[in-house]
Length: 480
Image 1 (cartoon, rainbow, N blue to C red):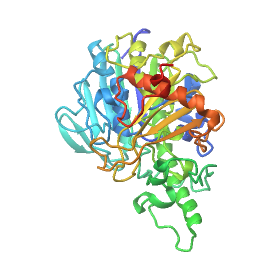
Image 2 (cartoon, rainbow, N blue to C red):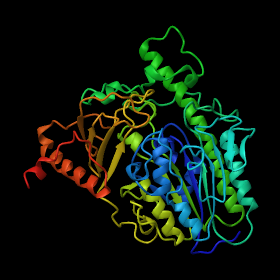
Image 3 (cartoon, one colour):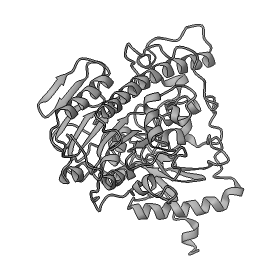
Image 4 (tube, rainbow, N blue to C red):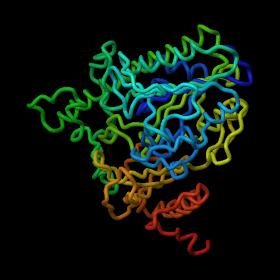
């Protein structure tokens, strides 16, 4: 299994709900992730990498296809992928790469939805189990003994060991962890039993926010279940004390699941180094979205606020990507991953792909601009478990404009209810914790009007249809 300089092997490790602020390379104050950090130490950390729809199934579809949810058709948890559409995997395979995906798929099951264009696939069914997971392959379903994070790594390394010849390969190692209900393995259980720092925004009262934040059923104090917590809170606690107790239980298990991921990332990079292949392999570590770790009193994701929006992305390939201590700070999205991988491999992208390759920024031109704004859309309105409202918006380097249109448009996973639309605007430079909605602040009137125009134009550029309730921006109506 040798590789040429121009056709690197590719390892893409994707976790589920791993927040960037639970990675020590990103300055985590709650845990250490030494093996994940090694990727950054050998390469580059991306600081402003964002998902375009903070939900597992849609994000995975965007990563694979290099398109936004409204183009690839995967808008909610209940809209499976048409697996026949072009992907970076189909392009790599067509160019002679051997391809595999192991672990979480979560984009549907059965004909038309199972993985396509992979030489080998062994995936969890739906969300999958932490212990003794069901593994689906072309041969059917098998229960594999062990802890899912270890099992997934085992299967990936077994496939790599089986390869013969010199053709390059690409393996997607997609972990279940640290997805809810955060079930650690025996090795790591209890390792975070000491008090874990509480976010400054834990007691956010949502005073300036719209109704979406107030209605969402994602509060640690109120919405974690006994399955999540593993034990009931002590009966003598006040409401505030119980909320802090629940936070500690949640975080203890979440971070222990991350620790197992960290160990297994190390297993993969150790395997590469033992074969003198690490320097010539494109290694990518990311998560399908961010996650609230008590920020604003929440767990889960879905919202366009930065803790949910920001994805970790660490990339190394020392023979191609010079290590630098300074992060890449340009705006990048999960829609960009496909074209970046393809350029790294010297393979043409598909015309329908909507992202942009950041391979030049990683290799030869670190200061090259990417985009001045990113577009986000969450479609699954008022879902039965979390009651998050549908919204879309635009994020620039300094500002974030969000339109909560609060309507499921009949999409699977949404309730049949809709609510009056509302706007939010944040100055993420002056208010990085997004505590003050300034949409109605007169001092931000010009910013607000400019951003509504930019949102409208970006939707047109990306071929997304604005909700009927979204007004044409005043500056466009007036012909300004």
